Image 1: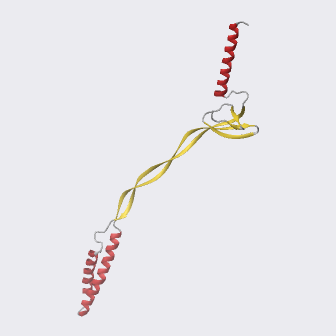
Image 2 (image 1 turned 120 degrees about the horizontal axis):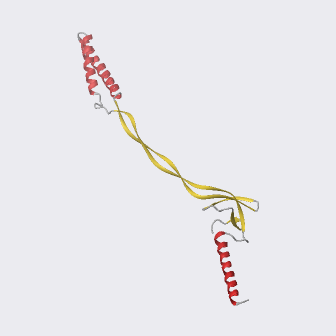
Length: 177
């Protein structure tokens, strides 16, 4: 064999060896390694709950604060009307007693009437009501790969689709290089 042929054969052997090493390490093409068969590949997602505030205006009926909390006006007017009516009923010294009794009863009645009127005095106001609601967001998380090796099945999550087979080391799929 001449010298050029020998150099060519040696260079070819080195090139084939280098290509074999690259193919084995990068593409999992080692003929001596074990491989699991890929049975199914499903896209996987992470689901996140994202809180946000949702607000709306509601009409609310509320009682108006009374201007006369002690109900003086109702008591005075009721006492005056009751006194006048009591004065009409009696005669002599009974008239004074009837006037006093009428004034007392009228004052009590006037206070109660004013109280009922104040309780019925309401207004509608808009109030903002807020509540927390949750939106969901799905983000890709890789692929759930179902594999089979030596009569066993399992599922592993991978960041890319594996193809038809996965390299196996110590009976478990090798997920990362």
